[in-house]
Image 1: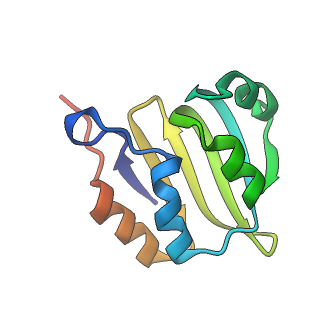
Image 2: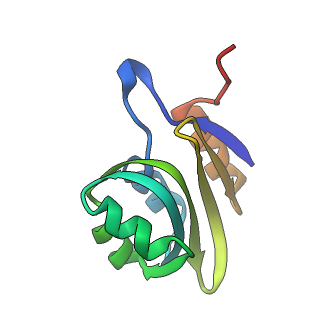
Length: 121
């Protein structure tokens, strides 16, 4: 498991929308199991309500639903392939992402691309 930044240079945000291109290189996802406590963007209230206790979506359904979200403040994403979880993303308090995957190469890629999270002191 790694921790990556949620905020990049010049206040840019790293969120699922940006991570999709990385995910597509390493995994063929069939469905997503998501539980969102707080997100911002188009349909955010609907998404929070629908997924408050967890909900599974096909890959296409999830991508369409989440396409308008620019920030996940609190939430978890389980990427599923052949009924097995291949990766997990956990957004923690708009500060960082915990990423855990069956592929160590994917974790290393995410760490190198987005940078390790280190709390401000």
